[in-house]
Amino acid sequence: MPETAAAGPTPPLPERGHVWVDDADPALLLMRGEVDVAVVEELRDRLGAESARGTDLAAVLPRVRVVDVSAVTFADSSAVGLLAGLVMALQPAGDALVVRGIGPTVETLLEVTGLLPHLVVEG
Image 1 (cartoon, rainbow, N blue to C red):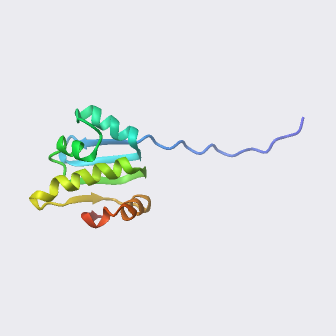
Image 2: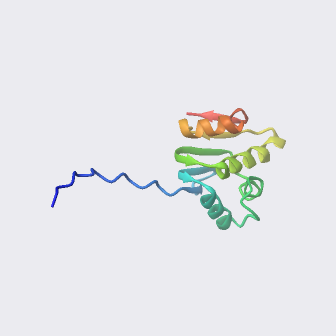
Image 3: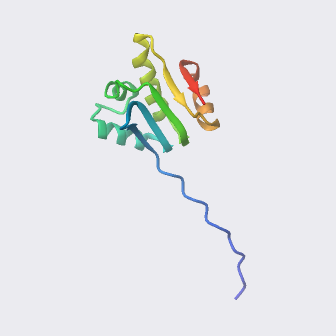
């Protein structure tokens, strides 16, 4: 029987995404891992929003002013929609959404979608 070459270590599976409000700071929304439509739907279900549209989620997240995306490894249009909904909810009062820890993947997505200029970027 021929010997087979070792394939090496198995790469880790992508981390399932999570989005939640920080219990210690209700103005802070945390995003981690792969934030896709399933993760945003899960957030909608937990919060009792009518739909996963960003504007509906923003209505049940009225205190959120800062979003930490430093641990996001992937984001799709659902994540962008959530951020856009928060931006739109804050604009009438003249407030801006602060986004912390934007890495290259998220930055490119926000640039392509045109949302980046509407955010205050920290770190």
